[in-house]
Image (tube, rainbow, N blue to C red; front, side, top):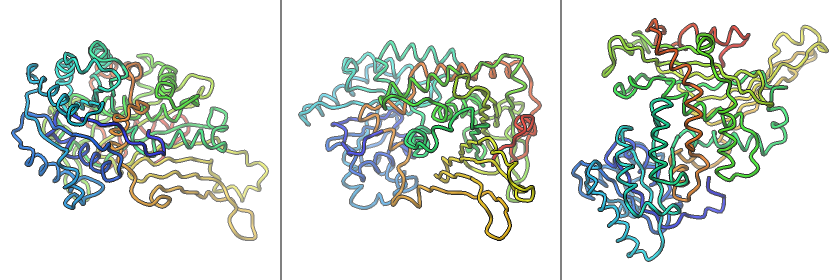
Length: 498
């Protein structure tokens, strides 16, 4: 997280493996372009797309311009700003599996170092399929330039491993090639403005921090719902599922932001130490408890907006008898002094009624015995709702007297909206994260022990599910998932906040 001084990073070369791929087209180049417009990129920078496709520099730039015009929050890439930005973008055709081809990267760095006449940062962004990461990392690790721990970094996209064992193996491999401070494991959720604002909300306001604990909080819910199905990702999703794809990384990281203790500073390792403490404090689920604290679902065929919707098993790339879950809901407890016996409910799913990521902090009810019975017919507990997407806002529900001659209490809301409070557009998550990589700030990136601690939380659930054959499909498109998910919270006397 760059300080308010707007200090730009030093001269930087960003190599993007998978440069002709979808992630670069939709996210990375639009993010870099916006950073350039906002004057955050260094004066000397180079972006090099790497891939096997046969692009020239000009045809590669034309392709990326299409991405900016389609996916950027600023779609004015045809003006002079793009003309100024694009000469710093080039393409280098190479086979990432050819170890001998990596000398091209060293030669490029040497040439730029001589041209610019100053020290520079080198970032290798692995925007590739997970199975390609070990080979690319090994070939990069053999380059002498990667011995520079202060100026050379490698960015690895999720998924980081398929389970605890493979995550540990990947950590061991990367740790043998690079120092931990060179490895940036990226989770784009942590780059979202509202997620970052959780720490400011909690620790910059004496109003909230004293009540952010088991004495006042009844439960916490974190929901990430999608209205769409697979959108052509059947091949990837079939080997992943909702628990791996969303809860193990995104939602557990959000939980850490909600539940963490106050850091003594915003040093990257100090903040990440606190997050690891939360993950390590999550109560381990015993095999016999899985059925009581975890629910999975898979959507079947149905209708949405009057149109027929195929079931998950009918999607391209999916097995006709697939047991992959498209919905998951779990209940966790953080066993420490602050959160003892406060349930944390996490759920995520595809083909649900709304696209939203929302955190709900439900406070314990205030005593109302002093009020006349007729005044409390609409009594509700205080609730803090943090919207992450699509709306970025914070809503505080509290009780107020209804105007009139009688004493009647109604719930009302105070709303803080980013859109209404600040001029201009909020930066996209990848803008924040790419800038942090260039400046060397790892605060919003996962450390090796964080990744493994998160896998340890979900491993008992994964292992239990692998031994059972689920009755799928078990929810209709545009519903809120299987009935068992509702019962997961209802048996505790609560309901999902939607």
